[in-house]
Image 1: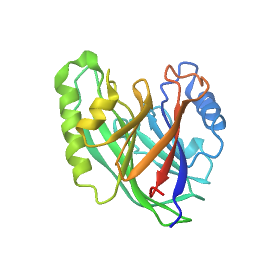
Image 2: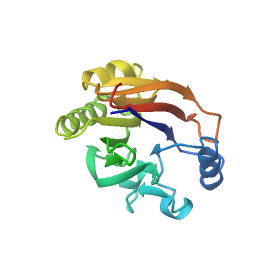
Image 3: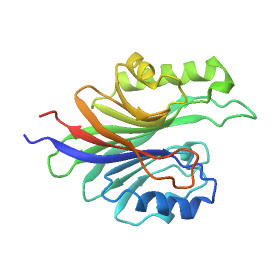
Image 4: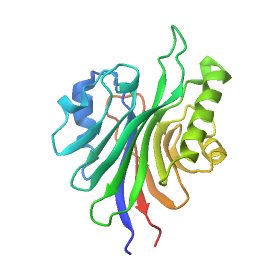
Length: 211
């Protein structure tokens, strides 16, 4: 079977110049994207902001809405979706961090994988929240019936080592990028143009089913 390729992008969308205009600029900067992983999206109502041609997985409550998935319905269809707790809140400092996930099928080839949008706790909160997040992520990935690709802000000095501890590969720029099962392949990693966020979006090509 011919390998399928999906263009992906991940970004922390904590926009500094207003969320709505920056979101439009962000999406316009990456035509052809099949799958987007968003962090800090809690101030955005993505279903309202985006065209009906895309699928959106975003919760209505503030904490779970922080991480979201957006996909091109002409390329991918969602088979199931939900949330899994990443880390408990730190009162006064951080809302709970959730793993926002969807099982996706590539329409042209029927390849299936699990996409996960996530945002690790910041280092300044100390080791405990990051350790909890990593442990919960590890358990969740181990139980996945499908290969996974995680688009996230790792908040790590060494994201490749962090992903390796989870049994995943890493492709990214700085703290932002993609952790992925070794049955998949992620390449052509690059930063996109600035879009008003203090994190430049990271794009890559996902290959489903290595040739």
